[in-house]
Length: 146
Image 1 (cartoon, helix red, strand yellow):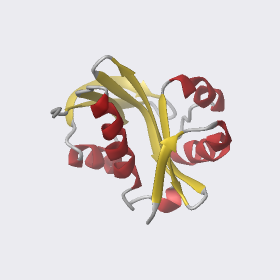
Image 2 (image 1 turned 90 degrees about the vertical axis):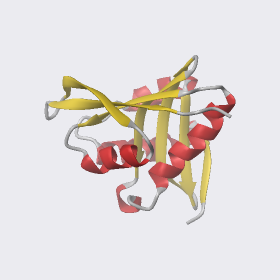
Image 3 (image 1 turned 135 degrees about the vertical axis):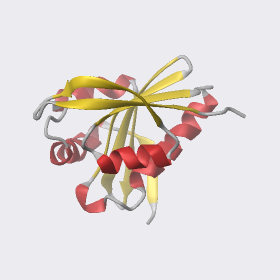
């Protein structure tokens, strides 16, 4: 599998939004992705299509993963892990050490990936998600910088 990692572009938005809608019961509105260009938003490109995306927000030495998803037909092929590894390369150069994210309590596949990547559970946000209402598991990771 050959992937290209790059900043999200406006021409990616339709494919990104299609993945978003097919991945989440309460998807971000498409306008959120347009507004989010000021942050660290990346795509994994396979061939000529968006295979997955990751939206992050860096503040000082912290990075919050706001959104990540992979096209349903391409899941379980390492694309999400690839997105994280490429993000780490960028954030390491910016001296980012701490990463945070929330995951739906029932999303065991994502939770397992985050554990594999070294994240640990630090809390619960009661009723954080809607449609259906569900708790979020708050996770963090501290990376050592060289």
